[in-house]
Length: 255
Length: 245
Image 1 (cartoon, rainbow over the protein chains, first blue to last red):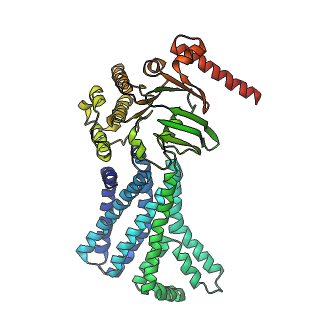
Image 2 (image 1 turned 180 degrees about the vertical axis):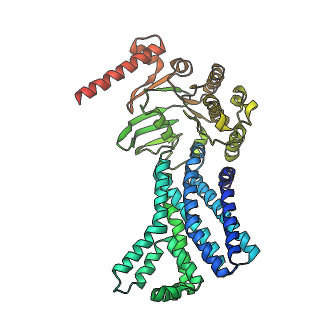
Image 3 (image 1 turned 60 degrees about the horizontal axis):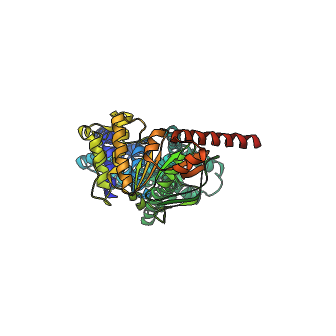
C-alpha cells in the first residue's frame, strides 16, 4: 500500500501540475495580503478562491489524472495486487498532493504575514473541500469510460454545488416566504459542502448580522461549539460518501 | 489448473461469453483460437479478474478467484496491447513491479537479456515502438517464474529474432510442466508451441480437444488445414443458426 502510494505520488509530481497549482495559490494569497493587510478582508477574499477555484481545480485535475493513470492501474491489476489498494492509493495520492499544494500555497503567506482563527479555519475548510471534490472527480471517472463525458459530469457537479444549488435555495426561500424556514435552510445548507463551507466561514467573520433573522439563527447554531462540530462532521461525511461509492464501483468495474 | 464453469459475461446487451466450460490442466499447452471478437481476450481477462463475469465460477489451482488477488502471483500474463505509463522508463517499470511484488524475490531475466532490453533501460515507455512494448510485456510475464502463462497474441509485432527467443523460452517453460495458454492468429506459432486446441466462436466453445484428435477428426494432416476446416465448420454453424432465426 505504502509503496503503491509512493509510486502514485511520484507519477503526480512528475506532471508538474501540482507545482503550478501551488505557485498560483502562493501568488493569489500574497497579492490578497498585499492589497489590504486587514485579516478579516483577507479571509473574505481568500474565501472566494477557496469556494470557487479549489473545487474546480480539484475536480478537473482528479478526473484528468484518473484517466491518465488508467494504464498504470491496468498494469497493477494484472499483478497480485488488491483492487481496493490500487484505488485507495490512487485517491490518496491525488487528494494528498492537492491538499499539500493548498496548505503550502495558502499557508506560507499566512506564516509570513500572520493569521487569525478565521484564516486557520479557512485552511481546514479548503483541505476538506479538496478531498471532497477529489472524491467527486473519482466518482465521475469510475462511472464512465469516456474521459470527455467524465469531465462533463465533474463540471456539472461543480456548477451544481457552486452556483445552481444557491439559486434553488433562494427560490425556495422566496416561494415559501410566509413560512418559518430556518430549520429547512439549515438542513439544506448541510446538503451542499460548498455552502456549508461558506456558512462556517461567514460565522467566523461576524458578518451574520447582514443576513437578518436567518443570520441570527445560523449564528446561534453554527456559532456554538456543537454547531461547529456538527458542520465539520458533515464535511467529513461529504468526504467519505463519494470515496465510498467510487471505490465500490471500481471494485466491480471491467478494466 | 484453471477450471471455468458456466461462465457468462455481458457488455450491455452484447453477450460476449456464453456459458463457457473449460478446464485447463497443468502441463498442457493450449492454443486458444477464434475469429476477432469471439471472446478470447474477455475470457483471459476474466481469469485475471480484470473483467468481472456476470455469472459462473473460475477456479485457479482449486480456489475461487472471486474478489481474490493473490492467485495472480501464479500467473504470468502478457497482454495483447501492453499499456504502460508514458513517462516512465523501461528500467523503472521492471524495478517497480519487482519492488511491488514481495511474493517472489528470484527473478527470471532470460527474456530481458534475449530481447536486448538491457541496452535500453533508460528509454521512456512513451517513445517505444509497439514491438518493444511487447518485449517489455513478455519480459514481465516471465520474470516471476509463475506456474501458469497466459499469452495474448505474444508474437504480434515482434521482430523474427525476438519471436525465436520467445518461442525458445515458451518451449523451455513447457518442458517444466507448466500450464500455457496462447491466443494467436499465427497458426505456425501455435503448431510449434501447443498440443491442445480450443476454438471459440461467437462467445461459445466450438471445439476443445487435443490437436492430434483434431487432425484425425478433420482428416487433415497439417495443423493449419485442420484449423481452416474448423473455421469452415463454425461459419456453417453460424449461417445455419441465422437461417433458423
